[in-house]
Amino acid sequence: MPPVATTPLNVVIVDDHAALRRGMELLLRRAGHRVVGTAGDAPTGEALILRRRPDVALVDLGLPGENGADMTRRLLHRISTSASCSTQVPPTRAS
Image 1 (tube, one colour):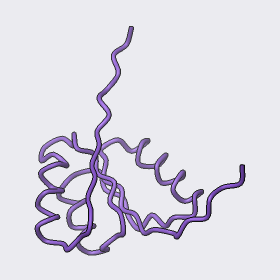
Image 2 (cartoon, rainbow, N blue to C red; image 1 turned 90 degrees about the horizontal axis):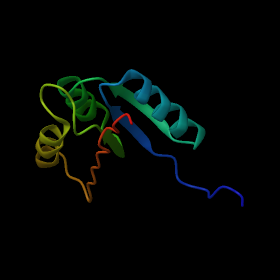
Image 3 (cartoon, rainbow, N blue to C red; image 1 turned 135 degrees about the vertical axis):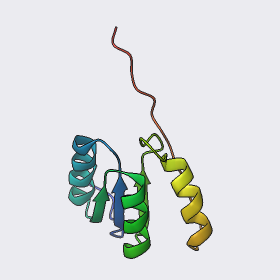
Image 4 (spheres, rainbow, N blue to C red; image 1 turned 180 degrees about the horizontal axis):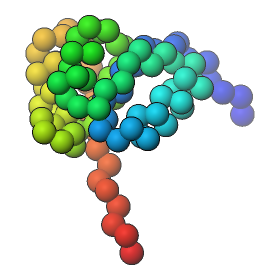
């Protein structure tokens, strides 16, 4: 099945795990999207999102310090947006 054509999106990634940020960035770029910035904490991520105004921000809800959920709520009050969706995958336990 051929890949579905999509409109490229400008994306910001906010996650405290560098390997996860890099992996998501590579996958998004391969899919034709533009990663316009990455951040490892909420204050840096919030400033980046306000400055770059991406189409999509992928935010880890479990950021250390100020969590991503609070940051996202605050940004939604400051930025006009049509939709927001956040998900968090719980860590897996070793058997």
